[in-house]
Image 1 (cartoon, one colour):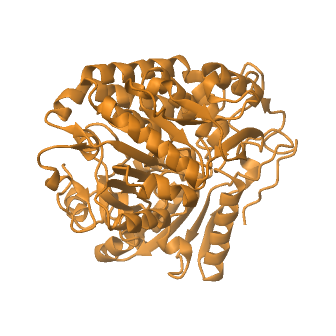
Image 2: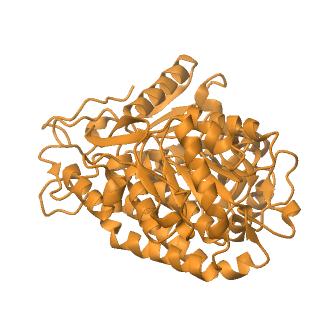
Length: 538
């Protein structure tokens, strides 16, 4: 499998060092300075809960505390200890839900203009501390600088768009009450914080679970800024099992927004069967590229490179390529030229102190456990008969000599997966691709639909009529023609087909309608338990 030993000075990491000013000690000091109330005297992150005795909107600043047992967290970049998460037990989480629900009635009666003003004040605070939020995400989840900055900026710009356009979307609608958020670690701000701020803007009180695998420190600073601005936001940490009774099943929770794995999403859906709670459950699928009667290889090369952003640790990444047999040689030439040129490694490693941070497609995976999981998938597929097409070497990455590189993985690709392998039906969520060779359009559709529901899919073809026809046959919410599709969170709705999504669609008015009540709620756009009630808008 792929070599994962740290680089020595004879490899590509010769002479690289940590960029001055980016050391974790400096970033940690800046985080505490930005939000001192969010940290204990020894620098540990605290939980943020509402204040039941408060009568004014926003809960009077909330209450920061550290009940439960601290859990150590470390950086995937090089294993540096980052601090601890304050892990709540079920009883403490239920108290937090009660406090959050207590804030909802007063906040819902606050005029929309004032709610918008408080959200805008939160965005101003986030802009002030943009640099430390970016560096925190780099350390916490291993994003290279441009991707970490994009996560921050997309959150700020996206919420600002809602603030500017919220009035007509709210016409005739009222907030649900208390919205609970459970999201994955890969987009802490542009997904989780973005959703929380919009949910509060429309009049809900909000409680969110800190992602256990990363992003909690940056989220904590944003939550502190939001509280100072008067928003009724609570942020709690804890294991999913004990907290599910509070954050999913509790009678005071009016809506659940979840982003994560399919197994956890199914468990949440089962917990909601006998309730009337509103929900948005975003889960994974094996998003696929289909390649048929295609000749624009330079175009595809650029799209393939972009697809490797953040090591494909995205719900809209494309790990599966379904390729017409006669085009396999041209596809492989294009694909291999891209993967062999990918830049990855330590996002803080520079050759000289005054160098800019490196322009990388990706840094580490979220942790060494994920690397081990992908190695297991690789080995399992090989035993079943898959053909290894490409095995990248870690020695081609950029590393500081002697650093821990256990969370890094070079790109790899397999051809002709056995149907019994986990990779055949499951999303790797990392830089491990698979290629399936097909001989008919019907076979291509079947192989692209292998996971029974995707968030996105794309078709590479010179035949526009074929692309249009296939869009109705693919079980993906967004389908691209010679282009990748992404989540998006403003005017364009987002959701999923089949097993990749359950509940209301989001984006623009759909997000606002998902967390408010109004006329026509029986026709909310979504992929629901009973039926697919309403198709997504074009």
